[in-house]
Structures are given as C-alpha cells and as structure tokens.
Length: 220
Image 1 (cartoon, one colour):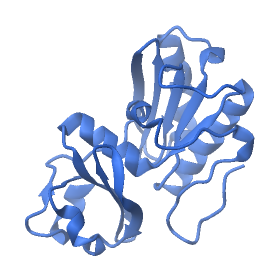
Image 2 (spheres, helix red, strand yellow):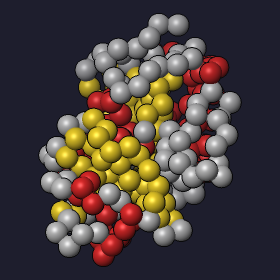
Image 3 (cartoon, helix red, strand yellow):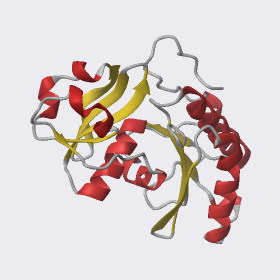
Image 4 (tube, one colour):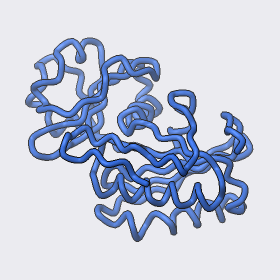
C-alpha cells in the first residue's frame, strides 16, 4: 500500500457536527460538497461522496487515501464517518489519515478569517465545550472537553475565539476576541493537515477521540 503525498488524489470526510462535509483533492485543485442536515449523516454521506466524485470526473479507484475527522464531536456522527471511511478504504485498498476535528475547525477558521492564533471551540452539550488552541496550523494547547469557563485563561491571549464561540461568549474573559460568526469544520481544509498525523492501514481501525471518558471504544 503506497502512502499518499500532498499531491495525491484524496478524499476527506467530516461528520463531527451537524454538517456533513466531503471534499476531493485532484490534480492540484480541491472541491467539496457540504450539507447541514443534523442527524442525517447516514443518509447524506455516501450520496455526497458519489456526487462529488462524479462532479470531478473521478472513478472511485482514483482515490489514493482518505482523511477522516476523528473527533472530538458528536458520538453518532463520528462513528458513522469512521465506519464509512474504514469501509471505503478497505474496499479501495487505500490508507486512512485520522485528524483532530478541532484542528480541522481551526484550519477552516484560519482560511476564512486569516487569523494565525485560533482558539477553536465546539459545542459539546451538557454545558461543556471541546476546545483546542492552534497557532500557525500547529496545536499549542491540547484538545480538551471542559466547561467554557475552565478554558485556560492564557489561551485567549491574542487568539481569535471561533467555532461555537458566540454561544458561550458570556463565559469567556471580557476582552476575549470572539468571532462574530460561528463556524463548522469543512472537509476541504483537511488537505492542509496531511502532515499532522500518520497514515494507517484501514485494518488497524480508527481510534475516535471523544475526549469524554465514558466512550472510548475504537471503531473496527
């Protein structure tokens, strides 16, 4: 199994939140299909992949690797994404690259805003957030789940707080730089992260990073 490079034909998937996002990179260009259909990932994901491959004139056999947003995020969405990515990678005999959903979110925010230091925040429900600090594309504050008021105070220094930041703004320091609009991860930004983790054979199984201790099982 050959390992992909930045110039390979790649498929990327994100199902970590309410959006179902897929992207293809081929011939130096990238495009994506994106649907916000909460709790409809099972219905939406495979048709979106087929539609995007057809739009780019690609056969399934052209894909040389699959990038997967592997958490944190919605438990059911992550499991659906992992199952589809693993199944396709096995069928196509291509490797998988699991990446942090917060790293993907930070990359999306960086592309839209131009910010270099980003405090990426996702709604974790139950009064908590998933949060990670990223600077120049690198993680400088490890992904975690916590109440919004427990995010380390120094993470806010010079950072754009974005993702689901507006929902929890009242819990942040008064001088926090909170983006006016919320963001969701977009699969197209996964192609900028392919050096951030190692490719693996699909038979290895995908370890999903739920961050909450009660859910720890890897996906076969």
